[in-house]
Each structure stands twice: as structure tokens, then as C-alpha cells.
Image 1 (cartoon, rainbow, N blue to C red):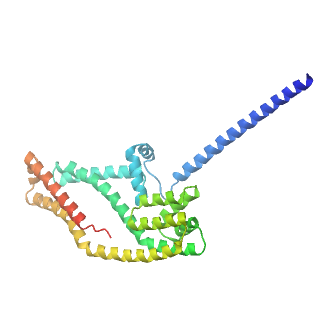
Image 2 (image 1 turned 135 degrees about the vertical axis):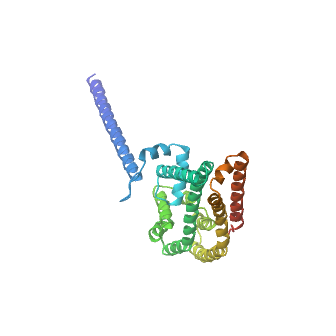
Length: 312
């Protein structure tokens, strides 16, 4: 009987000890998790030296919306040092400014039209920045391929070679490869990390390079020889793209000169006949003519840009 009492008492004490240890481990784990979240949040919101973020409250609320997430994705591909909140406020201020400017210089009817054009121009600006960054990245691809080939020939693993290329190359290639290296460091596969890179900076040259790296990583093979041959090909494509861009520069200038001529003609009419635009846009037929003219100018701009776009 005494042995049974002692056994029960010992089991009870052991159970209490295990409960205390479990509660201690649970609270310690929660504290470490909270500390980790705080460090990651501080790192995500850290400000570079001399750069003070504005409109933080608006930025936090905007990021919760679909529009804010879309702006954030576009800003991430452009390399601009702006938050979604800052970009949103700057766009609203710019739209308001050109609205008032068009209404005062031309006529009140042109205020909303200029505002819509301003919204379109903000989206076009992001697309232009993304295309510019992608073009600069494409020009760095031959050097990137050469660094990867040299690092692989020296016996380094592909993950290490990507990290080395991120340190050697300037922006935007260095920044983008640093993102890939960080993704690999937290356990992402090479296929997924490189696929995200092609989504951020879509181009045929990058797709070819990524396909070569992925296939060589999966099946093995002479990756050094493939990268050497790819380097030569990328250099040739770089020169070809430069020649095509030079040949089409006059056409590109013509495309942008068309809307400038339209705005200039309106200013000229208003200067020769003061108040003519107010009288013209005061009638329905005049408003319809202006809208049709803007549509034709836009169509001409789009057609010229489309005809001058040659994929190399």
C-alpha cells in the first residue's frame, strides 16, 4: 500500500514538473516568436539614412487594399524608392495640379480630361520605369552569364555563384540577384527563386538564361560550356537591340510629337482668339469634337508606337 502511495505521489510530482516545463517552453517560444516578428517588421520598415518616409498612416491603410497591393507590386519592379502611400499622394497632387492648370489655361472642360490623362500618365510612368529597368538588366546579362560561368568553373555551387554575382554587379542586376540569394537562403528552391525573377523583369534573354540554369541544376551537364555560349549570344543580341533602337529613334520622337502638336494647337487657338475654347466647349457638339480629336491623337500615338515596336 505504501509503495502504491509513493508511486502515485511520484507520478503526480513528475506530471507537475512536466507541466511547468511545458508552460515555460511555451511562453519562451511565444516570446522568441514575438521578438522575431518585431525584428522582421523593423527591418521591413527601416528607413535608409537621410530618408524619412512620409504618409505612414495612409501607407498602412493603402497596403490593405487591392489598389495598394497592385501599386506595391509595380513599385517593386521599378526600383523607385517610394512607398505606395507616397506614390498615391504624389499622383493625386499631380492630377489636381494639371486639372487646375488645364482649366485655367484652356477651359474648364479640359480640367477633367487632363485629370484622366494624368492618371493614365502615372501608370504609364511606372510601366516606363519598369521597361527602363528591364532594359538595363538585359544589358547586364552578358556580364552576369560570364560571372556565373567563371564561378561554376572554379567549383562553386550555383547558389554560391548567384550570391557572388549579386556582390559583383551593380543595380539593377545586383539588387535582383540579392533578392534571389535571400530567397535561396530562407529555403526557396532555385526554380522558384529564378521564376520570380523572370516575373519581375520579363525578357526573352532572361528566360533563356534562367532556363539554362534550371535545366543544368536539374539534370546536370556542361553548365560552363552552356554559359560561355550564352554569353556570346547575349553580347550579339545586345548589339542588335542597340542598332534597332538607334534606327527607330526618329519614329519614337514622332510618336511623342503628335500629342504635343495637339496641345500646342489648342494653346495657339486660345492665344489668337481669347475665349474661343470656352465657347467651343460650351456646346455639346464642341465637346464631342474635342473628345473625338483626343481619341484620334491617342490612336495615332498608339499605332505609331505599335508599328515601331520590333521584338529582337
